[in-house]
Length: 276
Image 1 (cartoon, rainbow, N blue to C red):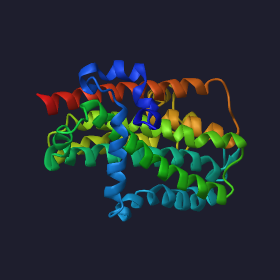
Image 2: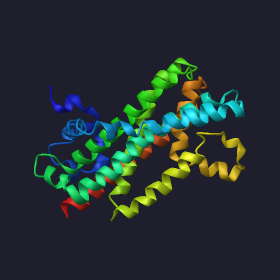
Image 3: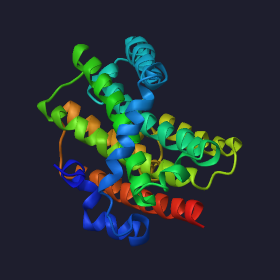
Image 4: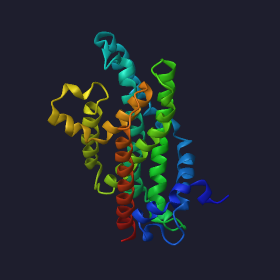
């Protein structure tokens, strides 16, 4: 079995076109999976740091969803904890992907010079970008899977459509991981990461995780509906509550386009940083 069999996505013509011929070179992007193997070996020794990010959404679920839910009653026709849980599931996917694709990638580029060493091997810039984006997405998937198990244990899942929740968290993680790496390529120092926090915090608070958008006036609602986390929350809430409708395809398209654009920018930025 070849690496192309193991990682067929990296051979996709659309991905190759978007990320560029030079980024992958003549050998293609099938070696991106080597980055995943490398990260697995590294995180075996620091697994506590790996799993620590999972607990924040769980604490929010227990404190706000369950605790505050005793005071708020039903929201949108369901108990408050049932309403909040899918929003925090999307946050788990986002957090796992973003933090690995930003802080860790910045350290590899600016300080450890790991990517420079990788370029001395048959790996190309496109392999590096795609491999670390895939790893960031897998970290988000691990957080999401554990959170979904907690939701099931607490009886917060209403429909068999929730079986599609994990594939959706993969899409959310890949989209945020790709954009996170692209943004990191423009960072000059650790202080610049305040901009990442500035972008993530409003999405976390105002994308509909904790209350419906009907509380806002139409102008603010349009602005919030343009945020990527809103589309992830909308998808997961519909699946876990069994409220599936054709409009969810727009959410899927939004996140897919975000992922492709983020991966393209990340690969081209890394190519500029590492090869020029």
